[in-house]
Length: 311
Image (cartoon, rainbow, N blue to C red; front, side, top):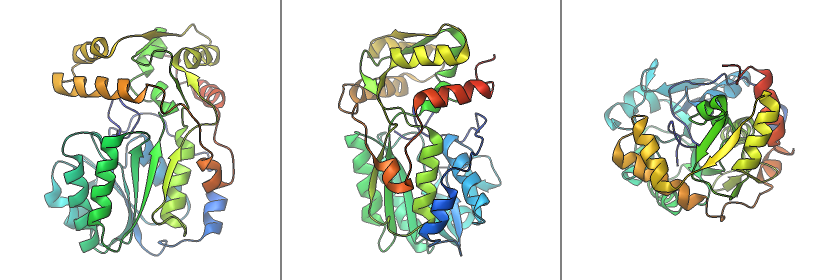
């Protein structure tokens, strides 16, 4: 899944506060700056992950081109005609966060088209945001690799974003005291976006990542009920998890204006992902950055301190 308003991935609506803590910058500089002499395109550059990647690259002095549907650098996944002239021409690397989702119909075709266009424009390195444990997303990953030619491709497969609780669609549930989601009692190793952005920037600017597939998780797995308890303690208000079935969640999404087909797709995807096969943690944040990933309780305290749940 690439992020939309109801998933764990990126959109380019620019929501959230996205403060850059600067963690990992020193180690990334030490790894080398393989593309520092050229511009990096960040697709969905105002989204939850893209915004953080832009901040980190800018702090390193790397020229950045932030692409979005309504920004100064137009980039729309539904309109490939403008990719070469407006976004990719002259870029040497790209961070790819596909909207609406790598598992969605049409994603593989979009990845193949992007790969062909990027190579023709002289891009040398691509870092792709993908979903952990998503077979349909793997098809899109392979489509990008197949069209990449001589480009270096790195895939970053992420667990659910912790920031969905303070920047995404689950924010209203926290504010209202009830997080509704079709997760049952399955545990998830929520990943903090600071960690994800640091890994992406390491792969964009350093050597030794070509062809790698990184599965990123937080340091421990929590059920949504346990996560709600930690959010409540940090926010100073009761927060509970409200489990629902996939069809019930699809109906809820439709009430919030999501189209029927998209609501059904998302609900089915969540139920599939939250069947337990993604519960285990990995050590790949530490392997890339040389430090442990941020714990969910630390995320919750920091978000509360930033005023995320004062509404």
